Image: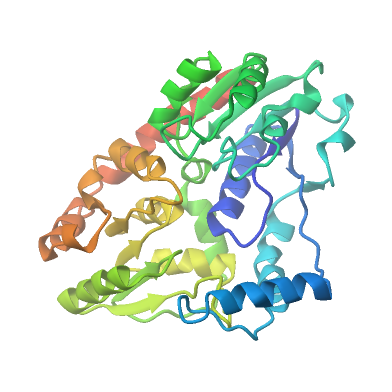
Length: 369
């Protein structure tokens, strides 16, 4: 069947890129003709003088409060980083670019799959009805949601009007699955539909698929490495990181945040290799936890409340790893590092991953039958 996949646009988001790659890879291996619908393609453009000046004033406002260089050209550096990272997408993801959903036609696809990532979270998607397929409301196609995520465990981000419209659209889906266990209840209580709890698409793909991209990577990481994948830097996270490194004698490898002036971002292949080569991972990223599990790395997660805690709670609960999640430096103890290492000392995590992978794969197969 001809399948179009709708998820978040591809930008500087490693987890977002890899979940799009993984879902497409799995559907292709099932024998389908699959494309990723890039509905807001990034354009290499510098801002107008007016926009640049407005951003300059914003930087001045936070001067001294955040680690911001008021003079560096964010857009130029962003373009360079995006071009570097986007090479993976161009090479490994079949992209169907559009400027708006209105450009799509009923005869383009037999199936549209929505998901994953926080695709059903209104604060990230301005026209939330679009990703419930409002533009295809009357089309004779199959509609599937795979691992769609609300990001949070409450319904406060939806207005009453959005709830009414999205509930009607959700009932038109042939099958719905969600990435968090709390999403099952949100679907039942607010959309009036049943949903199945499944794995993030990145976990559907066997590690051998990622190794194909790592094997040709020339990047060399330090021995005995503690990989720090931190999206939102903070003093308390730095304190925990250096305590872990000192306790175990690890060398720290930390990638730069998007807002740093040099913006030296790794390629997707280098990013994957970092998890492969790490002996320990410290992260505040959902996909940082995901790829630690995929590569069987002991890790500690520092929960990111602003970006959504439901994702962390649900994922770690699936693997009985809840104790590895902290939300403040006060919850960290040296013993937690030892427990994390012990949990990954055998193949129990990988056995659990294989069990969940099978049930998630079965959902997709049944939905597409």
